[in-house]
Image (cartoon, one colour):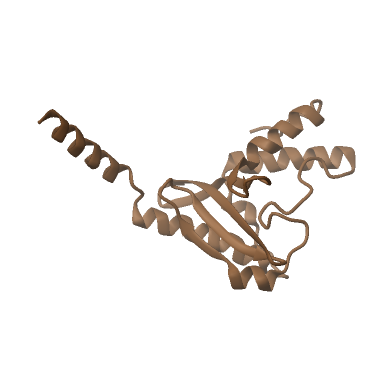
Length: 168
């Protein structure tokens, strides 16, 4: 009887932890908008409006380091496309976005015949979701496992320790 109660309790907990379909749709919409705006050749859209304050602070710190050194600091590629060059038509044609059971949103696409998988970590409050991190593909396993924010922060700490982050 105790085992049955435990199993039922675990099932109820797992169902309550599963993501809310409306929230999943909101998260997917943010990532879709990110790619739609980013892939436009001529846009005035400010993609930072899709990121959390913390994510934007990491980007601002990296930008400050780049400006101070008059060269690229830590981000030497397009972190949304996961490369330096891209074929917007191929990405648009192959882009698949889906919410995952762990709360992340996965974007899969091909760029110059190379498959990319990127996971987005989003936070949602008051029916508004924002991107808080990007989990990038590990070069060896080709699976998303590296935090973009952690990687940039680590680079800034080790390569540019004298450049302080912008005020919060």
